[in-house]
Image 1 (cartoon, rainbow, N blue to C red):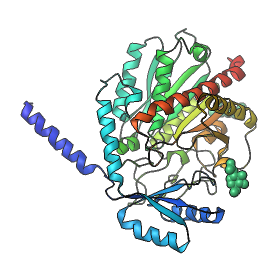
Image 2 (cartoon, helix red, strand yellow; image 1 turned 120 degrees about the vertical axis):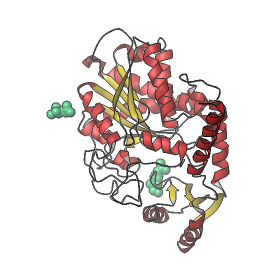
Image 3 (cartoon, rainbow, N blue to C red; image 1 turned 120 degrees about the horizontal axis):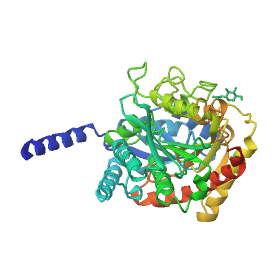
Image 4 (cartoon, protein in one colour; image 1 turned 180 degrees about the vertical axis):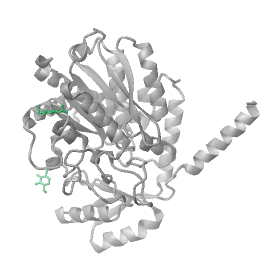
Length: 428
Ligand SMILES: *[C@@H]1O[C@H](CO)[C@@H](O)[C@H](O)[C@H]1NC(C)=O
Ligand SMILES: *[C@@H]1O[C@H](CO)[C@@H](O)[C@H](O)[C@H]1NC(C)=O
């Protein structure tokens, strides 16, 4: 191709990119201040009735003080009317989200341009699924004895879902496993960053972390919801679900973390309505991406001591069960693992994590991956880690905040892994 034609194609591609990008022009953010449990319950109800008002926080904690809602310009009047009717205190925080997103994109592009694939600087940017895969593919060559890359399946749109196994190269096979996945929810960008940071710690600093790898293999899947994640880079920054169409032509996507086949659809822990962010799908495992995680969990089920699913945000270690107020039989052992993580973090940075069963700490959830990991795949310990909030809506930390979040989080994950190893390594 001549360079002129190449240039033309590039310009057109960039133009197409601009057209596809939902720029959130004049989208507004309000802070809502519910005064009591009744008002909070009302907001939770509104969040379900009006799924297109993205009321952040209503599904997080009854005690969260500052809820935020992101609304399209044409929805502002009806939101304000509802708030007035129910006497809910509120204030406009941000008048035009497009400005913030433009700055964030510029920061990311500027910062990323300093690293050259396949090497990436985890602390210097948020990477796309394709960039992350390119990096993962380079690892077995760089660490032939210690890194093994497998493909376990493909996303709905055909993206390769990769799984990296890290060991210490001693040749011992079938060690017990610490399994980590990230990015079931597309917009939670700090999650894949943290998964990559863990990979770099274990590979580049393997001597320092010898204890973590002596009797355990680490298996890491940085991007589960590859289509949704890509969509947050190309089209819509706050997309959460998958990209597979539903029976409802108006709504695309399923919440992967409500799609797992253990007590799927139980009570109020998920939604049958494709308009909602917690839509569970038509059947358990009707999403190729949850099938992949299921297959990985089952593949390691006879030696899975620790399953950690990375999400954001909120500073929680959520344990099973999500679907019932009852507790799994080794709940208090799991609590001690979470306790080790929380204590290590508070000592290191004064960061505060809450921990306990998802049902009690947050709200009922059904069909989530930790319930499946313990209920079906016999994981010894399973934890959903809600990483700290960043940026304006919690999901959108600035590049400059990545380092602080991932280094703190690593202190916690390392401490939890050491506690798991201390408790269960005699089995190996
Ligand atoms: C959360 O709110 C409930 C009800 O108002 C209260 O009983 C509880 O102590 C609060 N928990 C925390 C951690 O603040
Ligand atoms: C989990 O453990 C139970 C009880 O020991 C066993 O029957 C079941 O087959 C195990 N599940 C898997 C996936 O191996």
